[in-house]
Length: 116
Image (tube, rainbow, N blue to C red):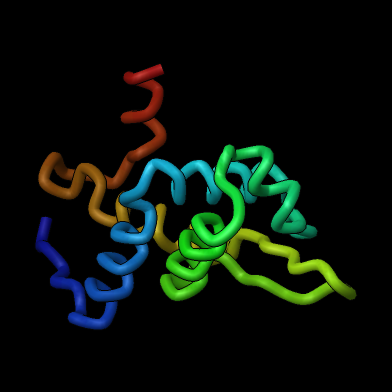
């Protein structure tokens, strides 16, 4: 099967997102926000849940927002953070886009069943 080269912007976006997820704390933050759903979590609750608070939490969220993986909005005096589900789904799709292409097919479901 023919390899489809990725455009430089696509590679750059993926690399930026993966770099942002390259911290255990940031990965924990994203995983907790995924669990929270579309309404997200206030910073205090998020920080307590992942064991990161104050300026360290702010720093990690800034990285995730910059990478396009997390969105924030003010809700009165609170700041709510939520995961950008389409961005996470696009990152996942990026990883599996060429799954099994060299083996003659694109059957990531069968591959997952082998591991389960």
